[in-house]
Length: 436
Image 1 (cartoon, rainbow, N blue to C red):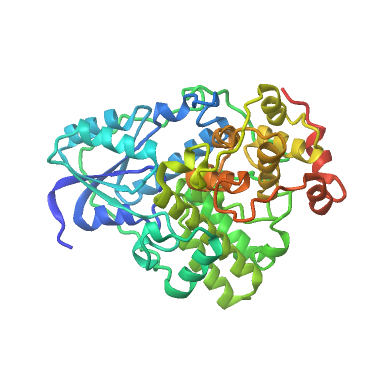
Image 2: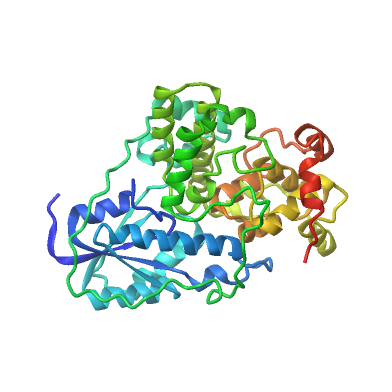
């Protein structure tokens, strides 16, 4: 592709916070010699949602700050300056476009309401001569490769999985290319602290199952450790329902959620592991989980904002309630279920909860307490380190019976506790915590 010699391109980072295997970044660098980048700590992301929770609580805020610090350093090595604003994108990008004669903006394509509204606001704030280039870059199986339209996405995951496994292939990871250093470029922006974002600083809880730093460097180190140093990948299917410690599962989800790590990178490293060590149910099962992640993204592409509505994508008319005492009891870990309580204390103290825990506490919230599932989803959005809009709302709909589960199951939390915490070790670990 012919490069633009004299103009500057802007890469707008959102949930693709990496330099390796980044389609958006490489698209800009392949067309423009001079590239700058921007990330915005959008104040809207730290306000209260309609359900009264902050959209982003302190755990993900700290993880995000670490991620941006790492991204800035990694971009610097590619001769790309990252401008960081604690402002809305429409203000920040307008400033950069005007100050640096930016003619093109490159970004990852998003499709949920808040993200599309923000993009519309940004486009309205700049000259119509500025070109916007959007790229899908958060999938394992690219939308152009799945051989079906969004409207044809199956209602059931298994059908989707079998189609993509049979008819599609995972694209190769993209090599990262460098830009041309822009002489005399001044960048007076800074990465905000937790205090600036409205939080008190804190230390990671000693019992956290996710004691890792944010950022691409930490993500790749974790991948290398889990796959090649400890070979824990080879036992993933046997241990993935664990509850205590950092190694019962891959823990990739927080880095996947903000794009510090691409699903394709994980996939091709699994293939490398299979070639060098072992190919078994465990190596396949991690790919299986990545396909689930894809599926919820495609469900959001198909059903759009129905994923946020009380009736979900099935438009079911259940009689939900909003009992404040029951909601607070669930949040505080003071329900009638010690297993639910332990998991809820864990998320309150760490911003993390196991997959097994999430299924149980969500089922208890929606099926036992009969509470409006969107309130639980909004609490998870605030608290989870690995909040991803599509997976979060897709999973909550699934458990609440308004999504993609044809069986509409209810978890028996007592039996689940007996099965996955038979010695009560997990419950003891967190129930002894004093809540503040």
